Length: 297
Image: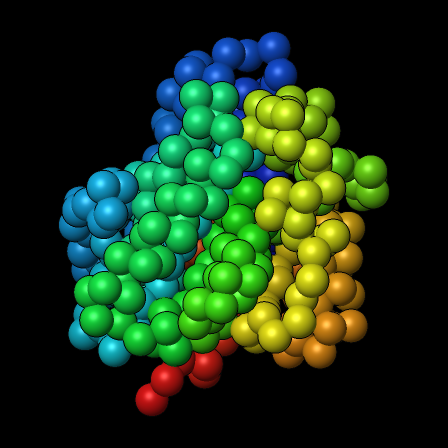
């Protein structure tokens, strides 16, 4: 009963406080400030440690909890490629550090409109290479991300494969934004977080002159052959439900080990409420199990 009330309260909070901020008429700098305040409600687990650092010239936050294992998790934050940061996602990365036993490294990749495509992808790849240079083997590094960061995680794996580089041990994506064309958006009865007009503007700001069908922008149009095991989690109350399902279908058709989890009556990147909402905590626990299961021994 209490969890049901909490779900209802969180849904209303997202709808009243977050969704209005994600409006195309609000300037991006103001959105960045307001969303950074909203993320204060996402709290990491007690005992989590955070360290600011720089990798390949890119600011990162290293998140750890307890005795970290031999593995690392490269986490790519969401925000439509125009907002969000490593700091906004400390709550979620902290819970992932606890659930996976990994050192979680979250880069502050460059954002549009100041830095359009492929800046975010270049920074993700540079951070990946820096972790390899630190001594992590590719099979000891998992890659994860939410929303735009989820699409970016898949795009990174595609780029690494196409350039004959070693691939990550696994991919984990929460509510992935995998089709920036928005030609097949889902229409839920309730969407507490995203507005299609905002995501459309974000897509234009990031892609600029690049065709939105480019698989490194919209991975659903890409080649999934030989990609690592993939876990996709998505809520039923979000316009990106079809993105997640199409991503799963494309990966399965290419023979990729794929797990798709749809959480009824939950919203975009509900995992940020881990530690508060039981279903969010359980989802992050499943993600941690997926990550651990595929790391090299």
